[in-house]
Length: 148
Length: 144
Length: 100
Image (cartoon, rainbow over the protein chains, first blue to last red):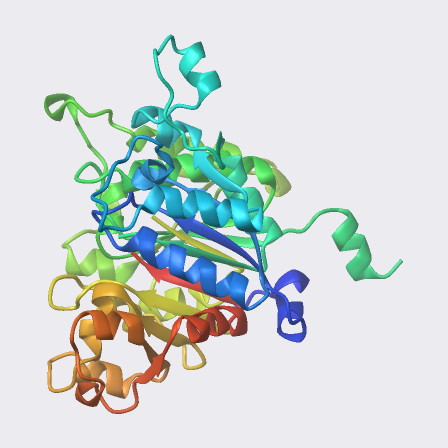
C-alpha cells in the first residue's frame, strides 16, 4: 500500500554532476547554530559547482535578513555574510512574508504600506510568500532544512 | 512524445511530506507548519502529513486556548480535507507512549470525488514500521 | 531509494536521535551535526543504538572539533565527514529528512 513510485525528477539526479538544492533556514542568527550551518553548507554546495535555486527563511529565520544587526566586531556578521554570499553567487534569498510581518521584518514597500517609519531588510534579500518555499521544493533536486 | 516528456510538460508532481513532531502552542512551529500545508495545497502536489512523537498532540480534540491568549489553530486542520489534503498519518506507537487513543483526536474527514463524494476519515493510524516505509518514499520532506 | 537523516540535537537532551534511528530504513544514512555530534561518543547509552543501526552513521567533523571531542572517542563505525562530504551525502540520497 505504501510502496509508492518515485517521481522521475529525483531518480535522474544520480547521473547528473550538478545538483539543484533548495535550502530552508528556520532559525534566526546567533541563538541557534542553524543559520551558520546552512551558510557553511551553502558555501560548500557552491564550491562544488552545484546550484542553489533558493534559500528560504522561515519562522525566526526571517531575522537573518535584518540590516539593523550590529554584532561585536570580532564576531561574524551573519546577515551581512548571507547578503554577500547572495550577491557573489546571484542567490535568491527569500524571507517569508507572513513570518516576517509577525516579527517586524519589513522591506521598503511593505513598511510604507503599513505606515511604518522604517524598513529593515538588507539588500540582497527579498520578501515573498510561502508559495516560494513549495516552488523551490518542486524545482530543486534536493531540499534541506536547517532549524532547531 | 514520450510519457516522461508529457509528464514534464504537465508539470512535476512530487511527493511532499510534512513531518510534525512538535506539540502546539509551546512553540510556533506547529502553526507555521500548518500554514505551509494550506498554501502548498494550491500546488497540486502529492501531499501527506506525518504526526510522530509530540506532533500527535497537535490533533488533540477539545483544545481551548482562551486563557493563554494564543489563537486556537486546531480548527484549521478541519479545512485540510477541502484542499484535498487527506493523508494524515498518525503513528500508533507515539500515541500509545502518550496515553492517547483515536477518540482523543479531532475527527477529520475529506470527501472522495471518485467515490460519489463519500466522506472518509483523513487520519490514518499507522505503525512505526509503516511510518518508516512512508517516510522512505518521499521526494521532499519538510520539518519545522 | 534512500533518505539522508540529519540530527542536530544532543540525545542527552532530546529524543531526536532515538526517534530518527527508530525510523531509518537499512539503505538510509544518518548525519549528526551541531549538538547532534554528542550522539557519536562511545561508551554512552546511545552508542549501542548507533552501532546497531542498519543505516550508515556519519558525523560532521567541524562540529566535533568545535566541541573538543576527540575523533578517537567515537563509536565504532561512525564515519567522519567534512562539509564537502555533507554536500555529497545530500546529493547521493533521494531526499533529506531533518529531525528538528
